[in-house]
Length: 96
Image 1 (cartoon, rainbow, N blue to C red):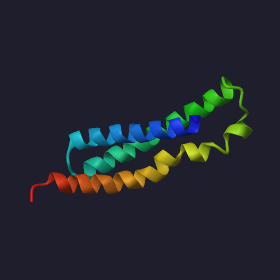
Image 2: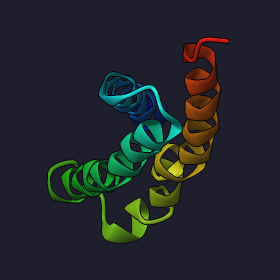
Image 3: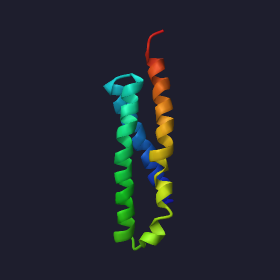
Image 4: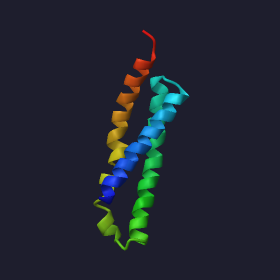
């Protein structure tokens, strides 16, 4: 359940970054920049989450390590989705 909540949190975080990218400019470049800025922030959040699991929840690194790639999905897989979504939104924002 915790992994699902972390992944949903990552998608919400990606949405926030895309909204800020939309406010920076409605060009695909601005949206792509927002998606690129999201990735290091998400990697930091995932690393902190792993540290909390090891340091405070009592899990070993060996137990946390197989779950780590699953936590990286919002950063890796959805970044592509964010890029495509950025292009679509930028095209919709331009006048015909």
